[in-house]
Image (cartoon, helix red, strand yellow):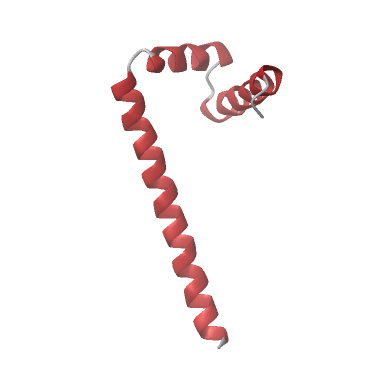
Amino acid sequence: LNHVSYQDSTRKVYYQQLAEITGRTVLEIEADFEMLLLMPDSLMILENRALDTLRFLHDKLNQTDRHINSEIN
């Protein structure tokens, strides 16, 4: 997983998927990420927001699972 060619291919696929979702070009997305790397505080804020979103979705999924399981028993 740490091999450079694997990381590059994964990055390309990720950027292509983002381009499809956002309607922006891969070059624009790459430039945005490069700019974020120069601003670590902004990058950390975005990372924390993404983690908060994942936690929310995880909690929501677990609440749904608990509700379903309690009805089965």
